[in-house]
Length: 80
Image 1 (spheres, rainbow, N blue to C red):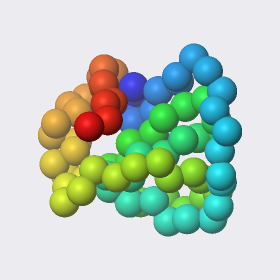
Image 2: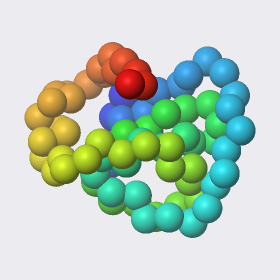
Image 3: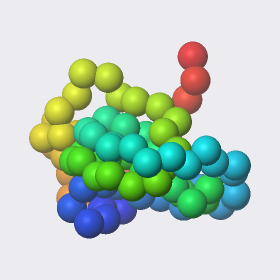
Image 4: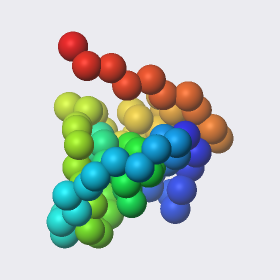
């Protein structure tokens, strides 16, 4: 995933998934499906037509930035 617009990390997933876009205000910790082919983790706010698919609970944007660091990162998603 790479930085984009000073508010998110975005990574292409190599497939197209169905979305359920709606006007939302994303905030730090939101995990978003964007245009059906990218996953986004927000560390700041944004309002747009998006599909929210998850949330990293109880985390501030500054904490996410510290964990991600600068530049590209590899993120692994899993379900329990």
